[in-house]
Length: 164
Image (cartoon, rainbow, N blue to C red; front, side, top):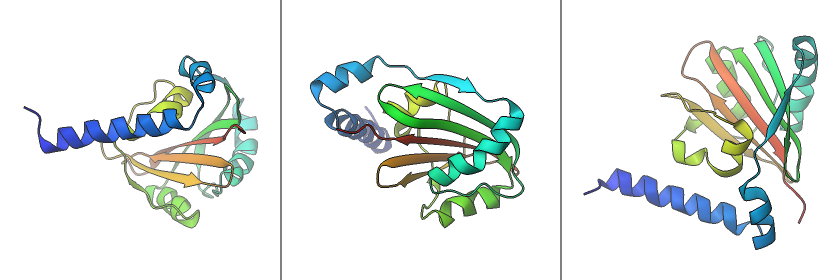
């Protein structure tokens, strides 16, 4: 017999999958169902230069004290401007970055890292105590994941939604 929290997780995952598949026509769904993202990492010097602009496109500001900056430019179906930016920063600065963009970081749950996010991030795994935020812009979305460490490791997935 399942517990109420297990049932809630299962229902939440089902609701998310229905929402994700409901956003695409049947033809689009079949194109995207099997699509796996491919990433092209930028060299470290280029990543440090590109990161502030990529994050600005996502409505975010790179913390001044960010280090270990990495950027992957990603190809994923009809999505454009897909990038994954990773860096290390004081945890409070990472959380403030999200709040300044209008998002409230909340503790992430595995069922929310599904669909496009999982495919674009590859084998991305949530860590215990990891915080996440979703920032929805007019035509783009950013997902921010912040580890529980201090300094925290931050992963930002940014993508433009395909036009319909």
